[in-house]
Amino acid sequence: MTHRWTRQAVLTAAGRLVRHQRRTIASLLLWPTGGRHGVREGDRAFGYLRGEVPVMLAMLSVLVLEGAAMAFLIPWPVVHLAVLVLHVCLVAQVLGSVAAGVTRPHVVSAGELRVRYGAAFDLRIPLHLITGVRLDRRVHDGGTVRLDGDRLEVVVSARTSVTVELAAPVPVTLPLGRTGTASLVRLHADDPGEFVRTLSARLQAVRHDQATAGDAG
Image 1 (cartoon, rainbow, N blue to C red):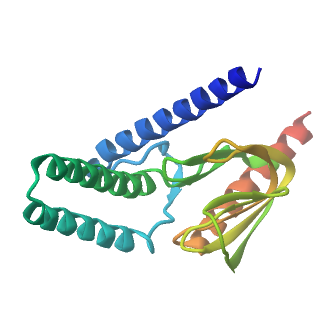
Image 2: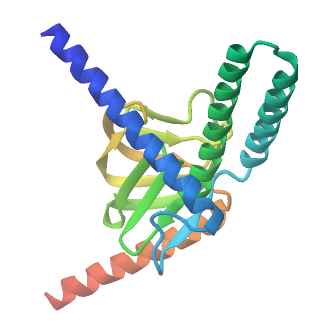
């Protein structure tokens, strides 16, 4: 039984990693065209990595320079090749993280709020479940996507700037596979004021439609 459970856990983790890599590669292909995944006509997209992209690109420059330096310093062909492959993988990973963050923004549509963090996290919240949204700037310690009780925090550069309250909990699957539910979501947007205004307007439209449907019934 333990062996079967361990095998299933390994297969699940491997499947999750493969899906993550597919999304990352798709983001790398989409990035040069200026496209954004999951953003349709009439939707509003909100970025969240403005403060992190320069840091990630600086890290990328360091990796490239380090790889070039290693090419001159290492005389052994096998070791040289291994270090080269490692650096290429690291560069691709950093580029993929930037591309995924840029091409997979938060999305406010006519029917849902989509909260994302690159290729690692994607949560869809129906607008009719949202009871309130407000500016709420906070500084955090710890990880980027985490669940504390019924509170979900999607943290960028150790901060969140918007709080979204829900009428009922929604299911959440964290990047490493842990599951739970959340009835309050904290997230970061590069332009939190516009995010709150846009989402508030969409919520008013949903409530108006619900009231109109109720009167007609």
